[in-house]
Image (cartoon, rainbow, N blue to C red; front, side, top):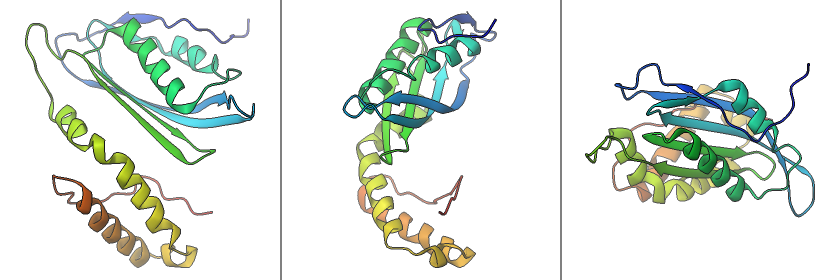
Amino acid sequence: MPSRPSNALETVPNPSPERDYVIHMRIPEFTCLCPKTGQPDFATLILDYVADRKCVELKSLKLYIWSYRDRGAFHEAVTNQILDDLVKELAPRYARLIARFYVLLVSCLVLLTVSAAVGEEKKTLLEEFNMEMLPYVALIEDGVNSIIATKSGAELATPEGKAKLKEEILAMANQYTPTPVVAVYFNRFFMQ
């Protein structure tokens, strides 16, 4: 029998609840509809969470994500709703959802930190870094887009051109951040 979209998220027991470890998922097939135009919007969702007692069951997550395919939703609202639903079902120690929408070239970052330990406030270095950098994410993304807009394909096609781009991004980022950025890495580099 074929699967169908579902609003239900199922859970499975955390196999190592005594350990803080990050569960990382990249979900490249997210789609929803623009509530203004009815046209499809496409996004890659990046979910990082530290489970407490429960982990999300992956098939149910896939069906849950599929359930948005025919729903009208603004990017910020749908990102927050997905994170809220996951937190409600999982009660994680930490959760972060990044939704990178491609139609409008918008990146929407939502960060939620929940209790990291029972009876004691505990922050990981990742949480501290994310909280410190959060106010600067939009400025840095805007700066990166501005720098890239000034480049030609020929400039970026060479190793030297990519190295120069990294230097410019590094200098721009350090204008905004209180903690110095020491390196820039491209995990993907596409040219059209």
